[in-house]
Length: 191
Image (tube, rainbow, N blue to C red; front, top):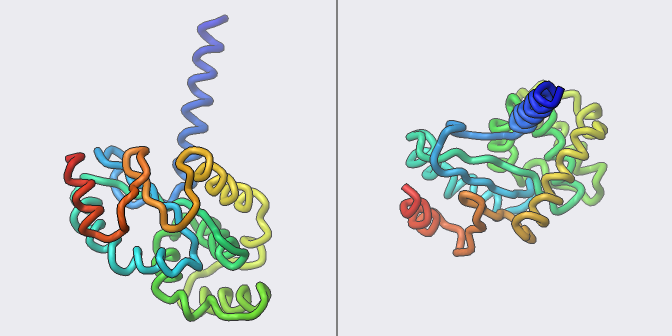
């Protein structure tokens, strides 16, 4: 009987881990030696800068070569970022594409004096670039909301995240000034 219970526990633990991983927005091979986690907020200009000036080189030199994988986690700093994160997470099969489009066009959708105006701009922008998303369903989905808030809670609890972007490399917080040169130096030590 103990064997059966142990097997069931292992099975459900494995199933839970598969489910948790399937919700993540990841670029790169699961088996990569270096694991990078980026806590970010979609309204953060520094996060947009990371996607524009650091991520392309990181992708070319480490992710596409199989040396590293990168996992994007939610750390919304305001209601607009929270709702944008819900859209990304709602279409996680296109999450990486949506992230890139939202960061590279941040000033187009982030406008508005109220959250309703920002949501309206976000909805119009998402539709204009061709993503087929049920906007209202996505931003009112409680499971997605909890998932995003749990990312934020875990970031604070496990890594003392208090700003975005925050980079975690192999479970250690990257403490240097965030630019590709500094990041590359840290990554090279792990190869």
